[in-house]
Length: 366
Image (cartoon, rainbow, N blue to C red):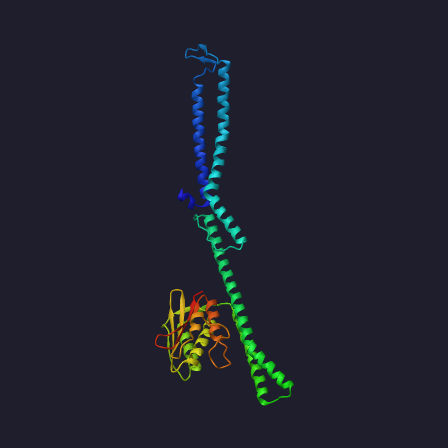
């Protein structure tokens, strides 16, 4: 029975049909044999020609015996029709019960749950035939749909949080601009008021540019290609030379081989992490690439004061920074987190035991 469940639909239907027909013909033969045996107990009438040429009349059946013989003939005739047809009908029912009933029921139940916006279930794989493959494809579709819905939900929540942070951080510049306008209306036009207007107008412009850059990052599509590790090593060394000129930098990359990643996306994350480490490092920065079976890890460490506890626990958020430099809004780590997630990985921020910060970007091979 287990072999029949895993057998292909065509082959299993043919096997069931032949088996049911074989049983039907065996039963038909048994019925005919039984009817012929009963007929032998009744006289059939007619004559018997002996070897010497003489003719001996045989006894004729009575009226009741003729009725019984007629019934036996009808039974044999109907059996020749009903048993083969019945065998085919039984094979169809067995085929539906053994091969189609459970998969169709599972698919119908899955469709109903998806129609009710319920994707938190799993479709069992009942066999390895065509219906089992259909169930497996449906389960894969459900899984991808659930993943897409979760991603859309996360993006919506992230956008809400981004808009809330943007609105919150704009309140202070707007308040300052309103106050400066009031002073100008009152005729107070000192140089400090003009400088304040210019400074906060520039700050709002930078906020808008930061928001625009985040929206562009969300629209990026991952385009992986084969990149040699030696190329990544030279690019990391050049980036560190430009961004951390006064720091001691060590770059450790596995020798030889290639990786399949989005080159531009990797460089953007690397520049963000190295630039952030260069701003807070005291003397040294360490950059290392490690390879796993299905992913590549970029780790950037510095010997600075380390990350704030809230940043380590909650992860990077937009417009959240401890830097006094107004040109930085905490978008480097936040955009790096988005890019890592787009590449199927994540960004991990930690504080080293001996002091300093450690940022680990994970890129899964697509």
